Structure formats: C-alpha cells, structure tokens
Amino acid sequence: MRFCPWYPLAEAAARAPVGEGVLQLRVVAGLVDYPRGKSAMVRYVHASDARAAAAALAVTGGGALLCRHLEFEAGARPAAVYAQVHGEFVRRFGAVPRDEAAACEVAP
Image (cartoon, rainbow, N blue to C red; front, side, top):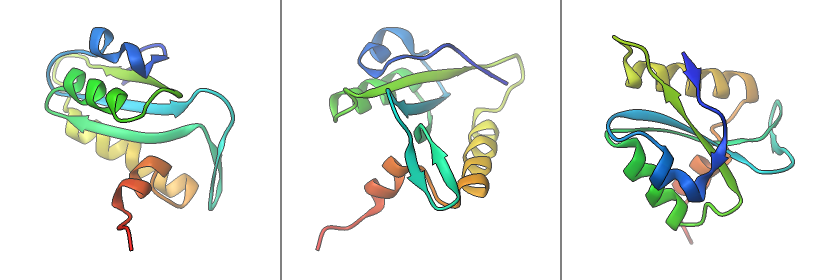
C-alpha cells in the first residue's frame, strides 16, 4: 500500500480519486497530543467516493489540513486497508484520531 504525496485539503475536489478509496488527513504544522505520543494525523476516511468525501471535508473546515489518498494496486480492498491503518493508529497512539473523536462527541 502506498499513499500519494500530501496536498492541501482545499484541492481535494480536483486531486482525490473518484470511487472507493482511503484518505488520510493531517495538520499542516505541529503535532497533536494523544495518550501514547504525538502525531500530525487527525483523521482516516474510507468512502465509496473518496473525491466527494474529501471535498465535503474541505467545505466543513479543513483549511488547515493536508490530505493524501491511497494509491491502490489491482485487487486491493480499500475497506481492509482502512481497517489496517486506522487500527495501527489506535494501537500506537491509544485513541482514535482527533477529528474522529470530535465528530463523536455529543453537545450537552
């Protein structure tokens, strides 16, 4: 598995692939604190249309984020790749990525 080079999330509508895919988002600068370390990663996404998902994320506040997408080889299974990279992140850093945790919080 190989991710493409990073690009601004604002450019995702033109750069992310159409169709099923996996996206990785990170902060432009600095690191985010997690229970077992620091990482620039803030979200992993598996979507039936990676371009549409990335474009929607850009509209909802991704101005300070970078994005990259997985470049799949023949026979690749995007859902399995997502499960692998997301699971590795949680095992290593002790929590889901920051933006996923924020999306799950319920306002009082």
